[in-house]
Amino acid sequence: MPLKALPALAALLVTIPVAAEESASSPLPALTIEAGAISVMGVSSGGYMATQLAVAWPERFSGLASFAAGPWGCAQGALSRAITQCMETRLGLPDLAELERRYAQYLDNGRVGDSAALAEQRVYLWHGGDDEVIDPRLGELLAEQYRDWLTNPETQLAVERTPTAVHGWPVSAAQNSNTDTVGCTEGGSPHLLDCGVDGADEALQWLYGTRMEPPEGEGRGKLMRFDQTRYYDGRRLADEGYVFVPKACEEGASCGLSVVLHGCRMSAGQVGEAFVRYSGLNEWAAQNRLVVLYPQAEPSLPNPQACWDWWGYDESSWQRDPVHDSRQGKQVQAIKAMVDQIASSGT
Image (cartoon, rainbow, N blue to C red; front, side, top):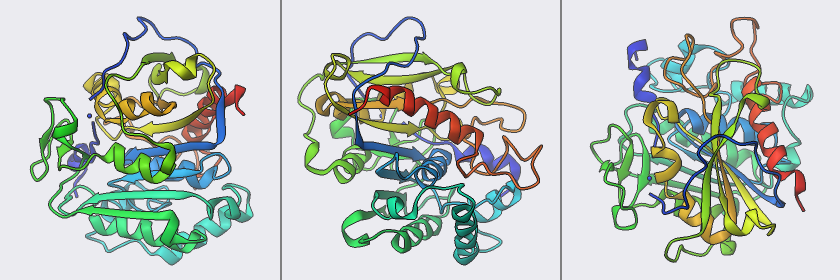
């Protein structure tokens, strides 16, 4: 895939009735978050980054949901490999044995978390069968990695494929009033694919089980902008991120937390609040006392499409072997710091 095709790595969006948002960014709140109820999700480049976070900090993230993304460590710090083996596969599929050696080395060096904690995660994976941006076989490799890592894959891992879906985030028009959805087989901006599948529903039900109840009417909650600059010292992230806080969580109730990462060309600076409002997650969050954190990347010279750093662009200019996919990764550390702040009054 030529470099000009990178914009196709765009990720995804969906609808939500919420209270009026804050007019200006605020500090992230410190809330009562249950330690065992923190998950991370992402789509496309956000899916790759979500997996990096889940592997780096399995003690923190008990669940992972990855939409339209491939195996952990795939790019190994090289943009050329990211394009030719981790998006399309014209140079062949990634070698899982090679990636496992990378993981083992990271484990020995303390760059990823305890393998015993990783083995207990719950994992939800979705891919469109007709995805021409990220080859669906790459999603199968991620599933294969987790089958090797998990204690009981049959009960901890869900792998979903929608055969005719292209690249995007699956939604159900019957449950989503957002008019910006596109055909499941057609795709395109804003990459909200009307496939009759509510991705937010499927992922949250799998990750949190009986804790989740279907939304009933307009849930009470607030979508707020927050100041990201205090968590990151570079220029690769936007000045502001978003967080959705249910009313009950704001009032001190014990709540869960999910970090949700957009894909390329899907940041708020590029598409407004489409993803943070219309992924379908906020309705479920309001009903089920779940805080949703939406960090934001932004375009830059090495990253013109505002992708998350899953190939090393934020560190490859000064490191021979960038560790973007480890605990030392700058963006991994920034997002982890945001989670720690929200959960600083945790149970």
